[in-house]
Amino acid sequence: MTDRRPVVVYGASGSTGRLVAEYLREYSIPFVAAGRDKARIQAVMDKVPGIETADYEIAETDGSVESLTELFDGREVVCNVVGPFLRYAPPALEAAVQAGVHYVDTAGEQLHMLRVQDEFGPRFAAKGRAVSTAMSIQYALHDIAARICLETPGVDSLELGSYACAIPTVGSTQSIFDVIRAQAHYLEDGQLKKYDGVELKDLVVPGTGFVLKGTNWGGTAMPVFFKNDRRVRNCKMYVAMQNQDIWRRVLDVERLFKVSLQWLPDEALYPLLDRMAAMMTPGSPPRENRQIQRSVDWCTARGNIATSRVVIHSSTGYQMTGLMQAYAAMRLLGNTYNGVGFRSPAELLGHRELMGALESYGFARITEESAS
Ligand SMILES: NC(=O)c1ccc[n+]([C@@H]2O[C@H](COP(=O)([O-])OP(=O)(O)OC[C@H]3O[C@@H](n4cnc5c(N)ncnc54)[C@H](OP(=O)(O)O)[C@@H]3O)[C@@H](O)[C@H]2O)c1
Image 1 (tube, rainbow, N blue to C red):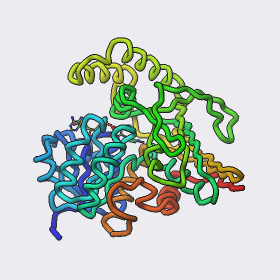
Image 2 (spheres, helix red, strand yellow; image 1 turned 180 degrees about the horizontal axis):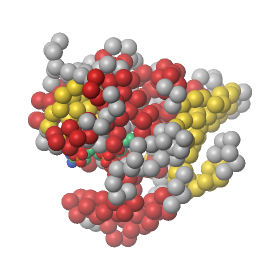
Image 3 (tube, rainbow, N blue to C red; image 1 turned 120 degrees about the vertical axis):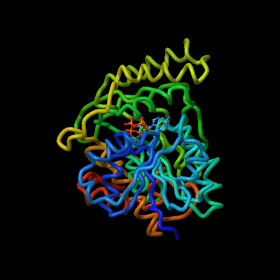
Image 4 (tube, rainbow, N blue to C red; image 1 turned 90 degrees about the vertical axis):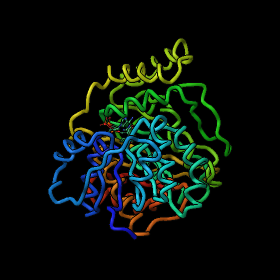
């Protein structure tokens, strides 16, 4: 045991990082607000509601494995909110495993999740530590819905949908565009299969009658979470954004990537992708509004003669993400988590318990749970 503050929020200056800080304070967890610019972090922390009663310090890091390992050493949990994760997560993961701390992040990028599972999972397990990704609105909520559906014996095929009413932050928009260049997968007959590219689907949003255009959204986390789960043979997910301009932009960027950008080296490609992302999201959006940012997420499962379905209504996905990160840190600190190595959010924390944490803050509610 050391007297160092046990939790590090890496990326504390971002839109999501400040929300993680807000909920760590709610759980009375001492933390380090870390990032690449001390002054920027301080300016952001000063605006966190209730920060005057939080036990925290600020730390600057150059983002190298050495600097991050020094920062993580003697701590318990790293909440990594520096994205896009395909670009920036590897040094943080490497440092976390070297320092021997638990690691959770907010990634939405499927290729990153596959790397975390296959490359880092066994290394964290060897250290007796847990590593979990997508501890965030996308995709912890869907993980919960799927695992409730799987409580029905005999179901083996999951189809998930999301109607997301959110204004993507700068980091989120960059991450959305980043995954367009990565191979996306779905699960069929227990095997990961490759999508040909962005796949469109008309989604009927439960309880509304709205039909919206959704995409396979980079494959999502769900096929990764269930690829080693012998209960699940098939798994696909589609996401429809309330802003129906976004799927068109995603298709445009995919076309541009295939026609002219795919040959560019990363150092030339990233600034271009970021410029396109900035055209959609030029700066940090305002704090979400509980009356406006309302989403619907669902999972339908079936087997030969069994079926089950779960619908979750929720609001303010970024705030929910802040809560999930802090709740995970609390459970990891308290040694009340399930297993080490790679764990999906709901596997690590229990799907009913994680749902309970969201419900207790009034963020999300299961509005339909049926089995037959
Ligand atoms: N899956 C989900 O549901 C979900 C939910 C929330 C967030 N996210 C993901 O979480 C990530 C962060 O989101 P956000 O909303 O906080 O975005 P944001 O407001 O744009 O913040 C990005 C954060 O990353 C830091 N950062 C960027 N590039 C860096 C680099 N090269 N080295 C060190 N730090 C760097 C930024 O630091 P500076 O301030 O110094 O620039 C800032 O702290 C994104 O990838 C987003 O997609 C996902």
